[in-house]
Length: 187
Image (tube, rainbow, N blue to C red; front, side, top):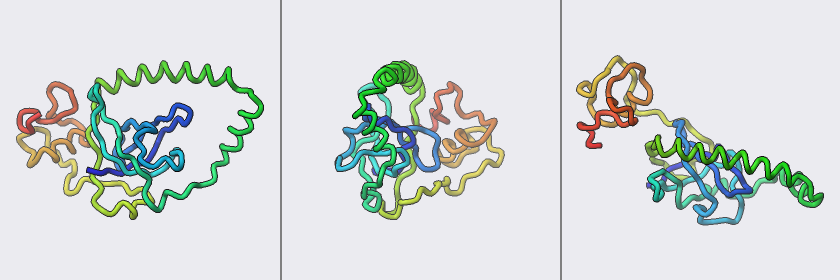
């Protein structure tokens, strides 16, 4: 199943970053090797389509990533000129080492956080990919916080997931793993 999202973090030197699903707050890991067409480098804010799968450690990651056809034309990158000038001058290597050390420590902490919290997949793309040049927030159809608290009050697992994610005071996740109504939804 193909999804659409926006690149919200990107480290071009390391070749990885994160995608945010439209209308969601979860991040999805993205590596440069997941792009089928590498004619241009991804940039912060790019819209991409992808499939999601779990890596060997059980974390979600993006695979078969592509730029929509209308977004595939390269844009001029003003930061490119600054990077080229730094390469020519040979400066900045100490700063790069310091930043890489800080980033490696943060990545180690983040990987532990990701193992403890597995996000659900984002919304499915239901329109042709070419129409998604501008991000559009996706709302859950027909659900709203109207005072339901327990699993027995839900009409579906999708409604239970919506309530757990968006409504305060619900009592549907007894073990705190982010999965509502475990017995009823078959988790």
